[in-house]
Length: 190
Image 1 (spheres, rainbow, N blue to C red):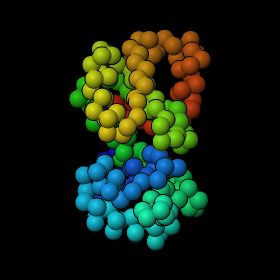
Image 2 (cartoon, rainbow, N blue to C red):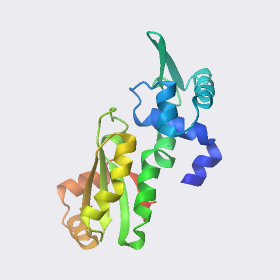
Image 3 (spheres, one colour):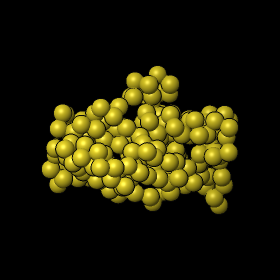
């Protein structure tokens, strides 16, 4: 997925869109995006100006400062949000963190409000992980991502055997998760 993102968007655009699309109703200041992405404010401002001109981002005056947010009324907003959510931002960061466990994680999905596109700036990230990893180790590996994205990652960890059994028994919770919108982040899910 990372290759798709780098083919479609430059590094700065990927970073800016990842932040704007993960919290579409929240506004960001140029310096805030620069701090979050590690990219200089001049470069961020240039990218934001291009995105505003393309009507993908809105520019809103906030007193003496300006905030930028995703233009949810753009005709391509939903498509762009779907591409960004699958190729960069939170899913990519979580996928990289989980990849270190290798074959111990069979599959992992983001579900809930982030996958549905209804998340708010303070929404948690719901993560279903199927594998054989100690929960404490898994949670620890995600803690730096939580700090960066300023959201809690709620992990639901189940073993391969438990996953298969619950699917066979048509577990209500797991069935609902698997039928709903999902963003695959690692393993066979991708």
